[in-house]
Image (cartoon, rainbow over all chains, first blue to last red; front, side):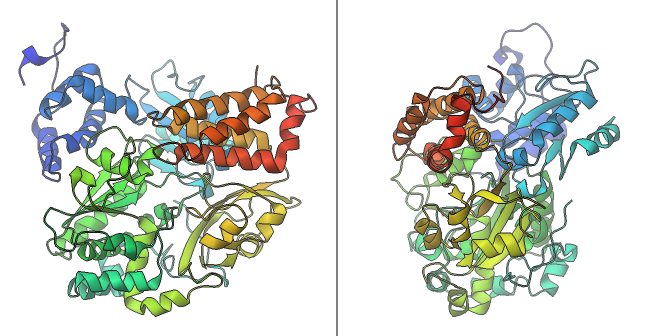
Amino acid sequence: MSATHLPAGTEAYEPVFVGRTLEELQKVLARYPTKQAALLPALWLVQRERGWISDRNMAEVAEVLSLTPAYVKGVVTFYTMYHQHPVGKHFVQVCTTSPCNLCGAEDVVRAFLKTTGAGEPGATSPDGSWTVIEVECLGACGFATPVLVDEDFIESVTPEKVPEIVRKYR
Amino acid sequence: MGFPHKPHPKETVVLSKYFGDAEARSLKGWKKRGGYEMLEKALAMDPNAVTEEVKASGLRGRGGAGFPTGLKWSFMPKEPKKPHYLCVNADESEPGTFKDREIMRWTPHGLLEGSVIAAHAIRAKTVYVYIRGEFTEPWTIMEQALAEANGAKLFGDIKVYLHRGAGAYICGEETALMNSIEGKRGNPRIKPPFPAAAGVFGMPTTINNVETLAAVPHILKNGAEWYKKLCLSNPKSTGTKLLSICGHIAQPGNYEVTMGFPLKDLLYECAGGMRPGRTLKACIPGGSSVPMLNREETESTLLDYEGCVERGTMLGSGGVIVFDDTADMVYQTMRLARFYAHESCAQCTQCREGTAWTTKILERILAGQGKMSDLDLLLELADNMTGKTICVLSDSCAAPVVSALKRFRSEFEDYIAGRRKPVLAA
C-alpha cells in the first residue's frame, strides 16, 4: 500500500499484511463471498502480530479490505477482545459474572491484581508484564473460576492457585 | 482441562457418551465409535427426507428458543436459486451455560457430522461455525478435527469454516451472529426478513445451536420414533437435554437427562445437592435470561419447555444456576443486570438506557443509597424493557430483576431501610 493513504503521522509504519501474514489473510478471504467478511479474522491477525490494534493498523486493514478507517474503528470498538491500546505482556481475564461470583471470583481478581503487581483492573504492572481485567461470562461456569491468561483457558482457579499460575508465566 | 464426572445412573447419556474419552476426538477414534456412518447415509438421502425425519423426532432448538428444528429447516427454499448457508451457533455465552463448550471439546466430529447433515438437508454448500473468541481450547480441537475430516474428504462439496468471535454476548443472537460473520458490528437485525429468506450475505440461511446439531446423527441412527420416546412429561418436549449446573452446588458440571426430568432430582441426586450444611434458596433453570425460582418452585419444576413455563420460567439454554442460603440476591441480581448492561449492543434506546439504569439503581441500593420508590422504578423500567426492542437482550435483563423482586423483595428492602450493611462504596 502507498504511504499517501496513511493517516497523518511522522513515524514510519511497518505494514502488518506482508509475507506470511498476507498469505494467511488471502486464505481467509477465500472463505467468504465478500472482502468485508474477513474483517474480524484480519483484526485477529493484527492483534496476534502487534499485541494490539492501533489507528494506523486500522487504516491498513481498511485499505486491504476496501473499507474506511472509520468503519473499521466502529467494528474494533464493538468487540471487547480487540485491544485499542497496548496491554501487558500477559493479559489476564477473570470471569466475575453471577455463577462465578457465587464461587468467589472477585477474590480471584484480587489475588491476580496483588500477585502480578497490576494494582487495579485494566492497569498494567509497572514492569509492563501484566494486565488484569474482569470480564463477563467466559462460558465455563461449572469450572468456576475460569481465567484466560493470553490464549490459555484455565479452569477452577482459586485465590490459592494464583501465585503458582503467575509464576508459570513469569 | 477439567474432566467430566462419571454419568449418574439417572442420566440418559446420548450426546455426552464420549465426554472425557480423549480418543473420541480423533477421526479414527470417532469412526471406531460409529461416527460419520450417519453422514454417509444422509448424503445419499433426499434432503427433504432428512428434514422430515428430524421434524418427526420433535427435536427443538437447544440454544434457548426451543423452535422446532425440522420446521426451521423446512423454511429454506426447496429449489436453491441462490447460495444457501448454515451457521452453527457456537457463541455460547449465556451465564450458567457451558454445554456447547463440552460438546466441542470432547466430540468435535459429532458436531461436524451433525452440521454437514443439516447443510445437506437445507441444501447449503457452506457452513460457518461461529465460535466465541474466548473458547481457545474448543477452537483448537475443532480446527484439528476439521483438518482431519477435510483431509479424508468426508464432506463432499460442502465446505465448513470456523469463524472466531471477538467478545460480544449479543453475537449469539442469530441475526447479530450473521452480521458479525459479514464483518459488521454485532447488531441484531429487525425481522422480517427471516434468515431463511435473507440471512448471511442476504442469502437463505439457517442458524442452529451446537447441541441441536450434535443430536441430529443420533436421530438418524436410532430413528425419530426412538427420539420421540425420550420424554418423561409433555410430548412436545422430546429427546435429551444437557443441563449445565453451576453456582452453589456440590458437583457442578453437565448432566444429560431425558426431557421432563425433575429439577429436584437433578440438583439433589445427580449433582450431589447443596454444599454441606446449606439449603437451597433460589435457582435459575435456563441460563441467566430466564426468571429465577424460589425453593418451592424449583423443587416442583419438570425440566422441559412446558414444565418450566408452568412454573413461570423457561428452559432456555439449560444453564442451571443454583443459589444457596448464603447468596445475596440483591448483589447477584445487580451482577446479572451489569452483565446485560455490558453486553447491550446499544442500538435500541430501551435496552441501552434501561440495562445501564437498572444496574445503577441496583448499585445504589447496594451502597445504602436506595429509596423505597426505587423498587417500583425498577419494575417500571423492566416493563419498558420487555417486548419493545429488536432482540430480547433487554427482556433478558428485566427477567431476573422482576423475578428477584417478586420472590426476594425483603432483601432489597433490608438494604434500603439500613437493616443490612452496604456492600458497595457510595
